[in-house]
Image (cartoon, rainbow, N blue to C red):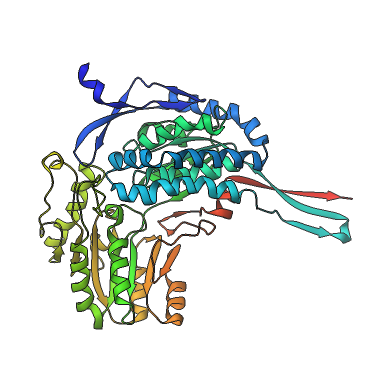
Length: 487
């Protein structure tokens, strides 16, 4: 019993109260490889209790004005910001990301998500049309859907959870959310602030657990008409199958195999520093990370040499050290999977220029069992290889050369994913032309990860269904109704 005292033990948040769970799952600190937290292993019973609480809260919450709901969202943003350092430390420890990334990206963006939707929900307008010849006026209204089921991933835990909760509750829905069982701590910490922010009991419910138990119970629950999921394409297939009998609204933000296309006239300095960042940020564990780099032949040798040199300066180490650029990967299994792709590259005759198996990573003794991996750059990989076709989701990127514009567009599009792409060129006509032809939901030119939250976010092909963002989230989390008045 005394051994258990050191663990942080999380509880579900249902109907405005913390509810202990009889079954618990181990959660690991990725930087040490040790269990440090126990997470509820919720199942159908806990999910049903949360849905019941959310249904009960829906009539009153949906009847509030957008301005009243907006005030509550802004208050929660204030409370998160006031505890930014506490949240950042927890996110870094739980996920393995650097404290710098958590401080500068995850937690500020989590607060921003609430502020953005608190504001945007006040500024939407609906459609109206006149049919004077028939004496009719037509207009639309939008109503909240009901109980929203929200499932968020482990790579940007609070950031992507709040990206779903904020628009759902701003538009008058109540929610049952399931964060990843591997990164549940900051969601649990946020629950401690909901009552103070002014959320009535049952408006936000958080049930912790695995996909096969808690996630499955949520997506197949008959009283949850809407599911927003961010995660893998394989899991999305299961969600689609399980939710199909109920005709649920689905928003699925899935994987990516994102290309960078670098033309000879690119600003080499800016291109290299940004492409190192786009390839390796957050240990490469971002759905928008660059994992296929196509470089025009005449600059290929110079680009590759400078890219490898810059990647070697990208520091990997203990997440709590603010000078480190990368921390640890999420789990032992995931680390083995990512390293497996590098081993595969070698069997296929590719060349590993830096990182895994080439450079040595020195870590403090207490982090020797952590899930660390150096930024790894590979060349000589065929387009048909699994390294160029599958989402690796780690600090691994492949560099190849191209000759013609049409050729590189075809190759960039030659995967089943279509989430994002980057194009590097000073030729304005070319960047517009190439951006239009790329099969990707987001295309950045001469930059990466510049986001206006008003604009649609999502992918084509196997990268998902639907879009989220200002107007798109408003449409997804509401049902439209056309009303005709004859006078």
